[in-house]
Length: 355
Length: 183
Image (tube, rainbow over all chains, first blue to last red; front, side, top):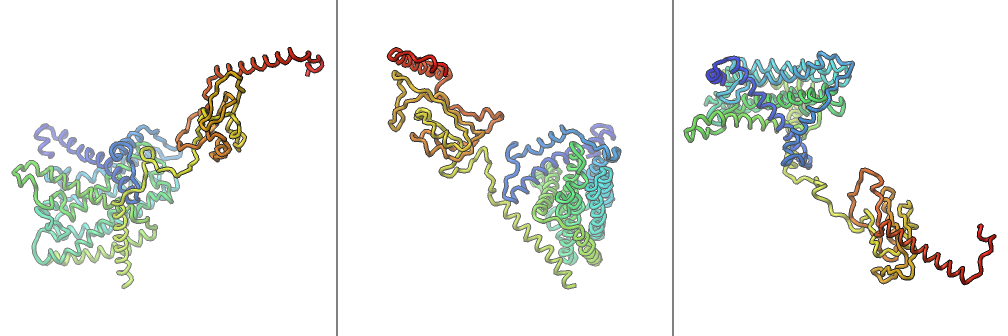
């Protein structure tokens, strides 16, 4: 898309700017949709209706909330460390937005088709920790600080199983490039890595159970990395008011929300790229069938978005199913269960990929 | 070691059981009633806002006396012989002009004690329960069908009638001693 745009506009900077706008144009409507979805999902899981009065089944509710947040006064307490307090929400948002640079939305659009895509995503999502820590610490509020420290401890711990699973996937596939990863799982759903990848043979069938384990491990640890229930210790409403964003109001609070929901989609997208074929359709393309090949990239965007939104829905589903874990339980799950399993899984997948 | 795997299995299994339950609830109809659009049917004999059918009221003041919070205030004027007040729906002849029949719903405790003593069953409980107001004085309901001018006219008529009666009496009787007049 960048090449195409630079051909059209004749200006690389403008082309880069336009292709960088695309993820924002995706994130904001997605967040508006996801917040509405979250409220509806939570409501229906509790036999309620959720927002019903703003638009059809309340679909305009989030937009109304958004306008309310814009109008709100931006309250900054006197004791806060203003420079970092003001910087933190943007840093958090930048962290989650930067992840989108490496996500392949379709074969024609990828922000940066770098060979280190997965590595870059792991590295950049670590920036969110810095932002959250900054927010909590500069708020000069004990609850905020608690939330931020919990978040830091949690994200740092859960990076390990995530990285180990990604390592196993890299060993099996031989690439860190997300676009290449998606391309390898083309044509049909049995080529997805959750079903053992595109190479037919003994290793494909041997690896399936371990791929399932890898998927579970990755999904659980990514859940913890985006601070979602059952691992939402940093925001634990019943204990910490609202965790690291207690002191924030108005648009800055909205930035935290934007980055939280943006992150949710980002990790879901990584899950779908690693295990569920990314932007590839599970059964061929209508565009190829009717001979309109220009349709294929749009179908790919559709599949990418719907896979991502499905995993976001599962995250919400888990949120409204499970209670929050305690801090010690959180650490137990990570260090005593996920990491050993991830290590064993890494070794077994490594051995299988030797066959 | 055995317990370790058991824990792992339990962790996954119980989450799946929980997810199944919550997914089941997604497809169950919600219990929410969208209040202003849909209302729950009220039970029989609900006690809400009072209504006074002033055409049936004979101005006997029994409801006001029964009221434990004194939220009903009634003023009456006696009719003069020429007045036609009509009858109540159960055939009683009305003898009083009800110039004022005010119920203050800010005070009313909805106990229904005023309903029972009414001889003509003109004060009743209705099913209206949405009558909140921004100003408390708007909760003072006026049930009297007479306007202020009409009420004043009735009063004047009665006073005139009374005065004529007095005059007749005074004409028939010897004048009252001055000492009694100063009372």
